[in-house]
Image 1 (spheres, rainbow, N blue to C red):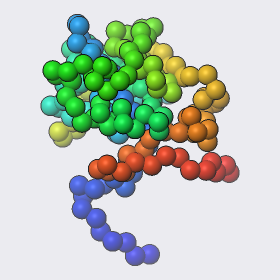
Image 2 (image 1 turned 90 degrees about the vertical axis):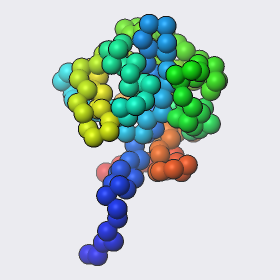
Image 3 (image 1 turned 135 degrees about the vertical axis):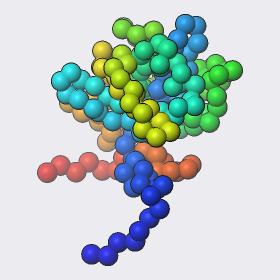
Image 4 (image 1 turned 60 degrees about the horizontal axis):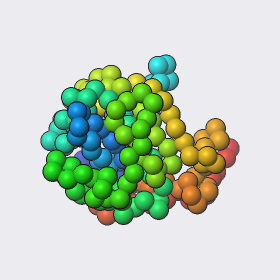
Length: 182
């Protein structure tokens, strides 16, 4: 088999088509939303998830101070809102208002959930190992939420209202195609 070598800087774009998420954080009275494409499950027992966040991002600062965050899963209809959250800074702006999203009170954390999303995962920061110019924010899962009808043993991405966004790089995204079962 023949391969074409790619620049090492593009390794993430070869594997990075998991769902793009909106990470919410809060410390004292300041809440923020950031778009993140680098998110994954990290442990079954205890349940943990991880999201990679740049060291200079406002969300990085809020998560370290507040020791918590939420991972919110938008559907494809929230593309413009998700892009807004990823291209505007929350240091001086309220991204909920700016991007037209609704903060929702969670059960275990102060960081708001996003009412328009398919679901959310409330997390307590467990660790934040350094990974170059990012930290891997590892969170213990405290609660998991999903809108009615979009989750039955798995996210039902074959339903139009549950189609997630997957970042391919730059301004390019895709949504799930057909389901394949073995």
